Length: 304
Image 1 (cartoon, helix red, strand yellow):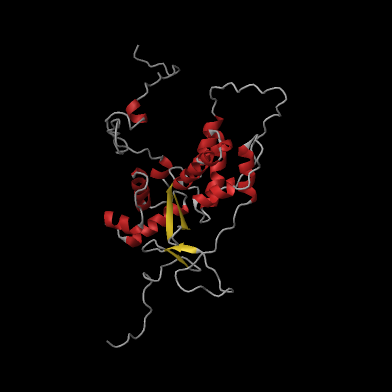
Image 2 (cartoon, one colour; image 1 turned 135 degrees about the horizontal axis):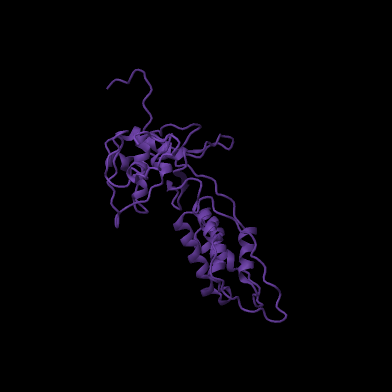
């Protein structure tokens, strides 16, 4: 009876959860000597970070850590090079290089804009999922099945309701810009009760009003353009009329006014750049440093 039956199939081994899932439990993987995860569930003060960032194959460790820090900050927090250099010991040069890495891989979007006072500021948007904008997320949410609400029955003789015309979109849909656009549209009914808009109509028209506001027009000018010269008869669909005006009368982008003397009409107009040291906006044919951060050219200095 001491002879083994070689034809018998070996018994299936039980699954070892600790070996297959090193993040479960605290037992060490003695064969690989890898990391042991002692995880506990967060219930407050935490930030969700995707593995596409934490395990990015091309980003530097500094860029990954900086992206995690930026995504953990509240909205409106300053993340310019000067502020980050004061917070971390890496210095302006390394932090500027890490910001450029994040911008190149889509985790940051930085655009230069001119305020109503003529000052050029840098708008920075942190993306926790590059390639998936807030508009795309809203569109995905819209495709989710939702409870269908019963629409009011169309009265006899009333023409079928058509979709609103397409409207212009802003170059940079900043939240404060869209908020101002909604305020303009919501206040139209105070001047003319016929311009009472639904929430869906305001959502459709707000990007077009934002496109007007980012052309350095005050809200009062946009409000005047939408309400002046309206027909005296009743407005059957005021949202469609406003959409037509916003698209047909969209003003051009105003020319950039430099702080120094105006350039000649045939001068080359270089694009706006971000200074690699102080993150200030300036115009130049290629990326680099602004005038204040640019190193002095070598040569003899004037006598004291």
